[in-house]
Image (tube, rainbow, N blue to C red):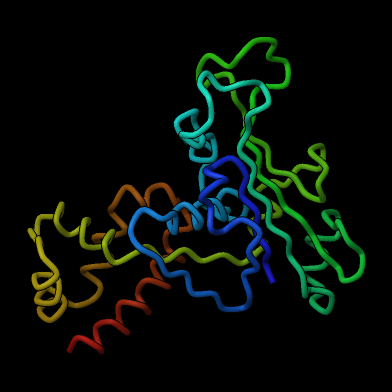
Length: 227
C-alpha cells in the first residue's frame, strides 16, 4: 500500500492528500483536476530516470492561493508511506533505513522543495530554493539514485503525448484517425523509433531502451485492438 500526502501544492482543493493507493488504483477525473500533477509528485520521489533539473521546482509551482511574496516558511512537500513489504527481503533491505513505524512495518520517503536554510530574507527568485529527498522523516537521511533505482516504477506516457509527437513528426499525423491509419500501414517499430528520437526519450537516457520495450508491448496490444 502507498499512502500519499501532498502539502502546499493546492491544499484546500487537493483531492489526493491522505489517500491510500493500493495494489491497483484507477485515477479518474476531468481535465485540470491534478491527475498529472499527482503522477509527477510520485516521480519526484521515486523515478530514477527523472533528472534533478526537473526535481528543482520553481515559485510558480506553489499554490496560487498563498500570499505573495512567498515567505521563508512556505514549502512544497510530498510524502509516500510504503507498507506490506515485510516478507520481501530485497525491498526490506532498501527501506530499512527509512522506517517510521516498526509494526506494521512502514517506510516513509519525502520530497521537499524549500528556501535555502541559510537564507535570511524573503526568497527573491528560484535560485533561493533547493530540493531534498529523504527517508524516515529525517531530512539528514537522504534518498538518492541508488535507492530509487531499486524501487520499481514504470512510466507510460498518455496517448495524447504520443499523438503530439506524431503531429510534430514528418509523418504529419494530425488526428486520431491519422494515427489509426498510420498504425495500420506501418510496423510498430516506426512509432517506437519516433518516440526514441523525442525530447522525452532523451531525458530518460539509458533508461529509454527499457521504456521502449514497455511501450512496444503496449503499442502491440493497441495495434491488435485497432486492427
